[in-house]
Image 1 (spheres, one colour):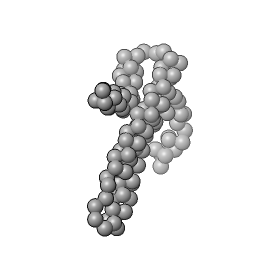
Image 2 (cartoon, helix red, strand yellow):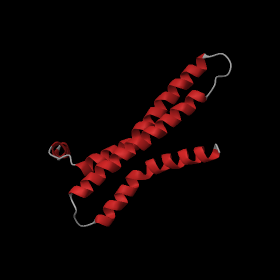
Image 3 (cartoon, rainbow, N blue to C red):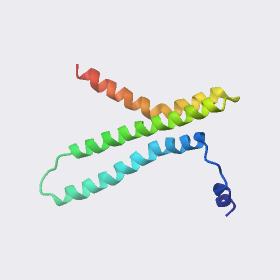
Image 4 (tube, rainbow, N blue to C red):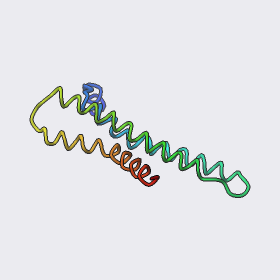
Length: 119
């Protein structure tokens, strides 16, 4: 009960919001994939014969893109807080920015590989 009371008194800052969005950039797309994949598998069992798996590929790509987009939002929020509060421990803050940017870097890397593979 004390923990719940503590949570209600917390102030939501840009940094804490960026952390929430950073966690959401991993959990929300993963949850979306699980739900959609289960729905696709249930639908596929009702069909006679084989089914095309391209909708699953689209689901994975959409979740991947959503993860990158949410990560960009998290990085921008954290960067805005870093610019606002220039305090000690800036090196750790840049490490935090790097960790928040990992999904975006993964998306950019995959897109770059796809574009380069097309040429």
